[in-house]
Length: 344
Image (cartoon, rainbow, N blue to C red; front, top):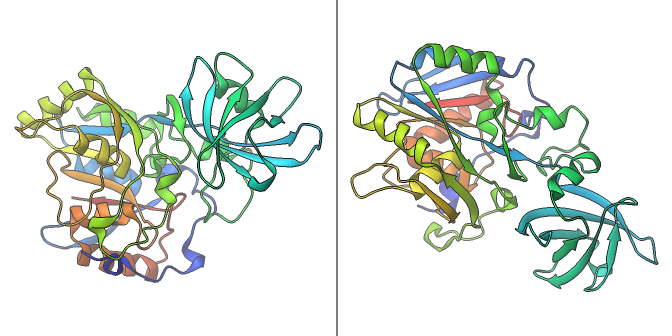
Protein backbone atom coordinates (compact mmCIF):
# COMPACT_ATOMS: atom_id res chain seq x y z
CA UNK A 1 0.00 0.00 0.00
CA UNK A 2 1.04 3.56 -0.75
CA UNK A 3 0.48 6.80 1.13
CA UNK A 4 -1.50 8.21 -1.79
CA UNK A 5 -4.06 5.38 -1.48
CA UNK A 6 -5.33 7.22 1.62
CA UNK A 7 -5.75 10.61 0.03
CA UNK A 8 -9.14 12.27 -0.12
CA UNK A 9 -10.34 15.86 -0.20
CA UNK A 10 -11.41 17.04 3.27
CA UNK A 11 -13.29 20.37 3.11
CA UNK A 12 -12.47 22.61 6.08
CA UNK A 13 -16.19 23.08 6.70
CA UNK A 14 -16.55 19.41 7.67
CA UNK A 15 -14.04 19.67 10.57
CA UNK A 16 -16.05 19.86 13.79
CA UNK A 17 -14.94 22.64 16.15
CA UNK A 18 -17.30 21.56 18.93
CA UNK A 19 -18.98 18.24 19.77
CA UNK A 20 -22.72 17.64 19.48
CA UNK A 21 -24.69 17.72 22.72
CA UNK A 22 -25.60 15.31 24.15
CA UNK A 23 -22.50 13.49 22.93
CA UNK A 24 -24.30 10.19 22.18
CA UNK A 25 -26.55 11.90 19.59
CA UNK A 26 -23.74 12.16 17.06
CA UNK A 27 -24.38 10.55 13.68
CA UNK A 28 -22.99 7.06 13.21
CA UNK A 29 -22.17 5.54 9.84
CA UNK A 30 -22.41 1.73 9.96
CA UNK A 31 -20.30 -0.14 7.44
CA UNK A 32 -20.64 -3.87 6.81
CA UNK A 33 -17.27 -4.95 5.50
CA UNK A 34 -18.64 -8.24 4.08
CA UNK A 35 -21.70 -6.91 2.18
CA UNK A 36 -20.21 -3.39 1.75
CA UNK A 37 -23.58 -1.96 2.81
CA UNK A 38 -23.43 1.54 4.34
CA UNK A 39 -26.15 2.79 6.69
CA UNK A 40 -26.76 6.08 8.49
CA UNK A 41 -27.64 5.78 12.17
CA UNK A 42 -27.34 7.69 15.46
CA UNK A 43 -24.68 6.69 17.99
CA UNK A 44 -27.25 5.48 20.55
CA UNK A 45 -28.24 2.80 17.98
CA UNK A 46 -24.95 1.03 18.72
CA UNK A 47 -26.66 -1.05 21.42
CA UNK A 48 -28.65 -2.84 18.69
CA UNK A 49 -25.46 -4.35 17.26
CA UNK A 50 -24.34 -5.90 20.55
CA UNK A 51 -25.38 -9.17 22.19
CA UNK A 52 -25.02 -10.82 25.57
CA UNK A 53 -21.48 -12.16 26.06
CA UNK A 54 -19.84 -9.53 23.85
CA UNK A 55 -17.18 -7.22 25.29
CA UNK A 56 -16.70 -3.50 24.68
CA UNK A 57 -13.00 -2.65 25.08
CA UNK A 58 -12.29 1.00 25.97
CA UNK A 59 -9.13 3.06 26.43
CA UNK A 60 -9.35 4.69 29.87
CA UNK A 61 -6.41 7.04 29.34
CA UNK A 62 -7.08 10.56 30.56
CA UNK A 63 -6.11 13.74 28.72
CA UNK A 64 -4.25 16.12 31.02
CA UNK A 65 -3.95 19.90 30.68
CA UNK A 66 -0.69 19.68 28.77
CA UNK A 67 -0.34 23.27 27.46
CA UNK A 68 1.37 25.59 29.94
CA UNK A 69 2.43 29.22 29.57
CA UNK A 70 5.25 30.52 31.72
CA UNK A 71 7.90 33.21 31.94
CA UNK A 72 11.61 32.72 31.66
CA UNK A 73 13.59 33.81 34.68
CA UNK A 74 15.38 37.19 34.44
CA UNK A 75 14.01 38.11 30.98
CA UNK A 76 10.31 37.38 31.64
CA UNK A 77 10.01 36.14 28.03
CA UNK A 78 6.70 34.30 27.49
CA UNK A 79 7.31 30.59 26.83
CA UNK A 80 4.81 27.89 25.92
CA UNK A 81 5.69 24.50 27.41
CA UNK A 82 3.77 21.52 25.99
CA UNK A 83 4.13 18.47 28.23
CA UNK A 84 4.64 15.26 26.25
CA UNK A 85 5.35 12.49 28.74
CA UNK A 86 6.55 11.87 32.26
CA UNK A 87 10.00 10.24 32.27
CA UNK A 88 10.58 9.90 36.01
CA UNK A 89 7.76 10.53 38.50
CA UNK A 90 10.01 10.55 41.59
CA UNK A 91 12.31 13.21 40.16
CA UNK A 92 9.53 15.09 38.28
CA UNK A 93 11.38 14.78 34.95
CA UNK A 94 9.40 15.32 31.74
CA UNK A 95 9.81 15.45 27.97
CA UNK A 96 8.34 18.71 26.66
CA UNK A 97 8.18 20.93 23.58
CA UNK A 98 8.97 24.62 24.03
CA UNK A 99 8.04 27.64 21.91
CA UNK A 100 9.89 29.82 20.99
CA UNK A 101 12.65 27.22 21.24
CA UNK A 102 15.51 29.62 20.40
CA UNK A 103 15.02 31.33 23.78
CA UNK A 104 15.16 28.17 25.88
CA UNK A 105 18.56 26.72 26.80
CA UNK A 106 19.86 24.17 29.29
CA UNK A 107 19.89 25.69 32.78
CA UNK A 108 17.01 28.11 32.11
CA UNK A 109 14.14 28.17 34.59
CA UNK A 110 10.55 28.77 33.48
CA UNK A 111 8.05 30.01 36.08
CA UNK A 112 4.32 29.23 35.70
CA UNK A 113 3.14 30.75 38.98
CA UNK A 114 4.61 31.40 42.42
CA UNK A 115 4.52 27.67 43.24
CA UNK A 116 5.37 25.86 40.03
CA UNK A 117 8.48 26.16 37.87
CA UNK A 118 10.75 23.87 35.85
CA UNK A 119 14.43 23.83 34.92
CA UNK A 120 15.68 22.76 31.48
CA UNK A 121 18.17 19.90 31.91
CA UNK A 122 18.63 18.65 28.33
CA UNK A 123 17.85 19.22 24.65
CA UNK A 124 16.12 16.42 22.71
CA UNK A 125 14.95 17.62 19.28
CA UNK A 126 14.85 21.10 17.71
CA UNK A 127 11.95 22.19 19.93
CA UNK A 128 12.18 19.34 22.43
CA UNK A 129 13.58 19.71 25.93
CA UNK A 130 13.85 17.58 29.07
CA UNK A 131 12.81 19.50 32.18
CA UNK A 132 12.67 18.92 35.91
CA UNK A 133 9.71 20.35 37.83
CA UNK A 134 10.24 21.71 41.33
CA UNK A 135 7.20 19.99 42.83
CA UNK A 136 7.70 16.45 44.05
CA UNK A 137 4.58 14.33 43.84
CA UNK A 138 1.86 14.67 41.27
CA UNK A 139 2.74 17.10 38.46
CA UNK A 140 -0.53 16.15 36.73
CA UNK A 141 -2.46 17.63 39.67
CA UNK A 142 -0.38 20.82 39.62
CA UNK A 143 -0.96 21.50 35.92
CA UNK A 144 -4.68 20.64 36.09
CA UNK A 145 -5.46 24.13 37.42
CA UNK A 146 -3.16 26.21 35.24
CA UNK A 147 -2.82 24.23 31.99
CA UNK A 148 -4.96 24.37 28.84
CA UNK A 149 -6.63 21.45 27.07
CA UNK A 150 -4.33 20.25 24.24
CA UNK A 151 -6.87 20.50 21.42
CA UNK A 152 -5.75 19.02 18.08
CA UNK A 153 -3.95 21.46 15.74
CA UNK A 154 -6.77 21.24 13.15
CA UNK A 155 -9.32 22.71 15.59
CA UNK A 156 -8.57 26.33 14.80
CA UNK A 157 -9.59 27.97 18.06
CA UNK A 158 -8.29 28.46 21.57
CA UNK A 159 -9.32 25.91 24.23
CA UNK A 160 -12.34 26.84 26.35
CA UNK A 161 -13.39 25.69 29.82
CA UNK A 162 -15.97 23.34 28.26
CA UNK A 163 -13.17 21.46 26.47
CA UNK A 164 -11.90 20.11 29.81
CA UNK A 165 -15.02 17.95 29.91
CA UNK A 166 -15.81 17.64 26.19
CA UNK A 167 -12.31 16.47 25.17
CA UNK A 168 -12.42 13.63 27.70
CA UNK A 169 -14.22 10.28 27.72
CA UNK A 170 -16.68 9.72 30.56
CA UNK A 171 -14.60 6.70 31.64
CA UNK A 172 -11.17 8.44 31.56
CA UNK A 173 -9.23 7.39 34.66
CA UNK A 174 -5.44 7.38 34.21
CA UNK A 175 -3.55 10.61 33.38
CA UNK A 176 -1.11 10.37 30.49
CA UNK A 177 -2.62 11.33 27.10
CA UNK A 178 -2.09 14.56 25.17
CA UNK A 179 -4.82 13.59 22.69
CA UNK A 180 -8.19 12.03 23.43
CA UNK A 181 -9.18 8.54 22.26
CA UNK A 182 -11.86 10.26 20.22
CA UNK A 183 -14.08 7.27 19.33
CA UNK A 184 -14.85 7.06 23.04
CA UNK A 185 -16.09 10.65 23.24
CA UNK A 186 -19.53 9.56 22.01
CA UNK A 187 -20.34 7.41 25.04
CA UNK A 188 -22.42 8.73 27.94
CA UNK A 189 -22.76 7.05 31.34
CA UNK A 190 -26.40 6.31 30.51
CA UNK A 191 -25.51 4.62 27.22
CA UNK A 192 -22.81 2.53 28.93
CA UNK A 193 -25.41 1.38 31.50
CA UNK A 194 -27.72 0.31 28.65
CA UNK A 195 -24.89 -1.67 27.09
CA UNK A 196 -24.11 -3.41 30.40
CA UNK A 197 -27.80 -4.21 30.91
CA UNK A 198 -27.68 -6.10 27.63
CA UNK A 199 -25.05 -8.43 29.12
CA UNK A 200 -22.04 -6.79 27.47
CA UNK A 201 -18.90 -6.40 29.61
CA UNK A 202 -17.07 -3.08 29.44
CA UNK A 203 -13.37 -3.85 29.63
CA UNK A 204 -10.66 -1.19 30.18
CA UNK A 205 -7.15 -1.03 28.75
CA UNK A 206 -4.74 1.91 28.60
CA UNK A 207 -2.80 3.47 25.76
CA UNK A 208 -1.51 6.99 26.42
CA UNK A 209 -1.90 8.78 23.10
CA UNK A 210 0.99 11.09 22.23
CA UNK A 211 1.53 13.92 19.73
CA UNK A 212 2.67 11.30 17.20
CA UNK A 213 -1.00 10.69 16.42
CA UNK A 214 -0.97 14.02 14.52
CA UNK A 215 2.41 13.52 12.86
CA UNK A 216 2.08 13.26 9.07
CA UNK A 217 3.38 10.21 7.23
CA UNK A 218 6.20 11.46 5.00
CA UNK A 219 7.04 8.35 2.96
CA UNK A 220 5.06 7.00 0.01
CA UNK A 221 6.11 3.43 0.84
CA UNK A 222 4.24 2.64 4.07
CA UNK A 223 6.67 -0.11 5.06
CA UNK A 224 9.23 2.64 5.71
CA UNK A 225 7.07 4.62 8.18
CA UNK A 226 8.00 4.46 11.86
CA UNK A 227 5.39 5.12 14.55
CA UNK A 228 6.15 7.01 17.77
CA UNK A 229 6.19 4.76 20.85
CA UNK A 230 3.27 5.04 23.27
CA UNK A 231 2.81 3.46 26.69
CA UNK A 232 0.07 0.83 27.10
CA UNK A 233 -1.27 -1.52 29.77
CA UNK A 234 -3.55 -4.57 29.61
CA UNK A 235 -4.37 -5.99 33.04
CA UNK A 236 -4.76 -9.70 33.76
CA UNK A 237 -8.46 -9.14 34.56
CA UNK A 238 -9.08 -7.35 31.24
CA UNK A 239 -7.21 -10.00 29.23
CA UNK A 240 -9.24 -12.71 30.96
CA UNK A 241 -12.57 -11.06 30.13
CA UNK A 242 -11.64 -10.50 26.48
CA UNK A 243 -10.38 -14.09 26.10
CA UNK A 244 -13.55 -15.47 27.68
CA UNK A 245 -15.56 -13.64 25.02
CA UNK A 246 -13.28 -14.87 22.20
CA UNK A 247 -13.43 -18.49 23.39
CA UNK A 248 -17.22 -18.22 23.76
CA UNK A 249 -17.47 -17.10 20.10
CA UNK A 250 -18.76 -13.66 21.09
CA UNK A 251 -17.76 -10.33 19.56
CA UNK A 252 -14.98 -8.05 20.72
CA UNK A 253 -16.13 -4.45 20.10
CA UNK A 254 -13.10 -2.17 20.16
CA UNK A 255 -13.44 1.57 20.80
CA UNK A 256 -10.88 3.43 18.70
CA UNK A 257 -7.61 2.88 16.91
CA UNK A 258 -5.56 3.33 20.11
CA UNK A 259 -7.41 0.46 21.80
CA UNK A 260 -7.02 -1.68 18.68
CA UNK A 261 -3.25 -1.07 18.67
CA UNK A 262 -2.91 -1.96 22.35
CA UNK A 263 -4.78 -5.24 21.87
CA UNK A 264 -3.05 -6.23 18.64
CA UNK A 265 0.34 -5.50 20.25
CA UNK A 266 -0.22 -8.09 22.95
CA UNK A 267 -1.41 -11.38 21.45
CA UNK A 268 -0.62 -15.01 22.13
CA UNK A 269 0.24 -17.61 19.47
CA UNK A 270 -3.32 -18.96 19.62
CA UNK A 271 -4.97 -15.58 19.00
CA UNK A 272 -5.80 -14.52 22.53
CA UNK A 273 -4.85 -11.40 24.50
CA UNK A 274 -2.03 -11.59 27.03
CA UNK A 275 -1.68 -9.23 30.00
CA UNK A 276 1.11 -6.78 29.29
CA UNK A 277 2.51 -3.32 29.84
CA UNK A 278 5.20 -1.38 28.06
CA UNK A 279 5.72 0.69 24.92
CA UNK A 280 4.27 0.00 21.49
CA UNK A 281 5.13 1.47 18.10
CA UNK A 282 2.89 -0.98 16.24
CA UNK A 283 1.86 0.38 12.85
CA UNK A 284 -1.28 -1.25 11.46
CA UNK A 285 -1.96 -0.74 7.76
CA UNK A 286 -3.30 -2.95 4.91
CA UNK A 287 -3.11 -5.92 4.66
CA UNK A 288 -2.82 -6.53 8.37
CA UNK A 289 -4.59 -9.62 9.71
CA UNK A 290 -6.48 -8.59 12.87
CA UNK A 291 -6.38 -11.22 15.63
CA UNK A 292 -8.58 -9.65 18.34
CA UNK A 293 -10.80 -6.91 16.88
CA UNK A 294 -14.20 -8.09 15.59
CA UNK A 295 -16.08 -4.78 15.39
CA UNK A 296 -14.44 -1.35 15.33
CA UNK A 297 -15.89 1.93 16.61
CA UNK A 298 -13.98 4.92 15.27
CA UNK A 299 -14.24 8.52 14.04
CA UNK A 300 -13.57 10.07 10.62
CA UNK A 301 -9.85 10.72 10.31
CA UNK A 302 -7.43 13.05 8.53
CA UNK A 303 -6.37 12.09 4.97
CA UNK A 304 -3.16 10.01 4.78
CA UNK A 305 -3.09 9.50 8.58
CA UNK A 306 -2.02 6.32 10.37
CA UNK A 307 -5.49 6.26 11.99
CA UNK A 308 -7.17 6.09 8.59
CA UNK A 309 -4.72 3.38 7.53
CA UNK A 310 -5.70 1.19 10.49
CA UNK A 311 -9.39 1.56 9.63
CA UNK A 312 -8.55 0.80 5.99
CA UNK A 313 -6.73 -2.33 7.10
CA UNK A 314 -9.82 -3.44 9.03
CA UNK A 315 -12.56 -2.63 6.51
CA UNK A 316 -10.76 -2.44 3.18
CA UNK A 317 -9.25 0.79 1.87
CA UNK A 318 -11.54 1.20 -1.16
CA UNK A 319 -14.67 0.72 0.94
CA UNK A 320 -13.48 3.21 3.57
CA UNK A 321 -12.58 5.91 1.03
CA UNK A 322 -15.98 5.38 -0.62
CA UNK A 323 -17.67 5.73 2.80
CA UNK A 324 -15.69 8.91 3.56
CA UNK A 325 -16.78 10.51 0.28
CA UNK A 326 -20.39 9.61 1.07
CA UNK A 327 -20.00 11.06 4.58
CA UNK A 328 -18.75 14.38 3.15
CA UNK A 329 -21.73 14.56 0.78
CA UNK A 330 -24.13 13.80 3.63
CA UNK A 331 -22.67 16.44 5.97
CA UNK A 332 -21.06 14.17 8.53
CA UNK A 333 -18.80 15.99 10.97
CA UNK A 334 -15.13 14.94 10.80
CA UNK A 335 -12.17 14.45 13.15
CA UNK A 336 -11.95 14.57 16.97
CA UNK A 337 -15.23 16.35 17.74
CA UNK A 338 -16.98 14.80 14.76
CA UNK A 339 -19.33 11.90 14.13
CA UNK A 340 -18.75 8.16 14.56
CA UNK A 341 -18.32 5.10 12.42
CA UNK A 342 -19.03 1.47 13.29
CA UNK A 343 -17.38 -1.19 11.12
CA UNK A 344 -19.01 -4.62 11.48
